[in-house]
Image (cartoon, rainbow, N blue to C red):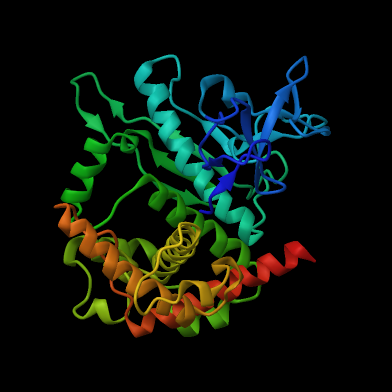
Length: 353
């Protein structure tokens, strides 16, 4: 994530800011420009850029809950921003717990959509595409009459992504991470992984890339349910670390792609952040890399990424924390990242044409 500055006073501002601490202007993120703007209030819910009254906006309807800082075209019939309009089922925002959970979920969701915008990934809503449009259901756990809790499931089904609301709570998510013996589990990681399945449908299955996909990831026509049952019964195959970025990636080619896609977004977004802060790490020539969103080489990104993760892991250990990046990019992963970046670069170039 890059660093922004207030276009009115020049103060450094960040992606989640809604007010400039220096000049006091309301801030909003304009997705069509991937830019943050200082705003002034007109009337009837219309705002304009502080230094350009011709650029007019409305705030996302979720701004009223202090959940979202994105902007909407004032001529649009949408009340929600490009990100929030994909949400179908949401937590109960009339309670403090529900509102806090929703705020954390949407914060991660907006971070995801920043990357999708930068890559030019098309994300039609269910209103625009009733069959396969992208939609999110944030699901609550169910409790029966005896007080037994059935956790909601996180997953993807033909453009519909479900996310367990309880995982917006750090304690719950950490318990699940430990029970699943996972080195990493975050809301943003869930979003990136599940959207990886959506991207597979759009850019691989529907994009004529199945044969190229199978050459690298394997044949996705193998029974998915059997693969899941085998994974949860027996665990990953011996030596999985040589070919997969995570144990779960070894379950099935679909999961391998979704994990590879998530890590591609992890890498690019974090490298952009490191470059924005001017971080210098030996052997990681970040500035020679240029804009990581313009790079399509898995090897070039890995060459910058690995030294950075080694340094960040050492810093985390110095603070008594778990590794910042508890994964290993084995050589076999580079080909998978190359495949993902080729897909993403094609989407970006198509969107720019």
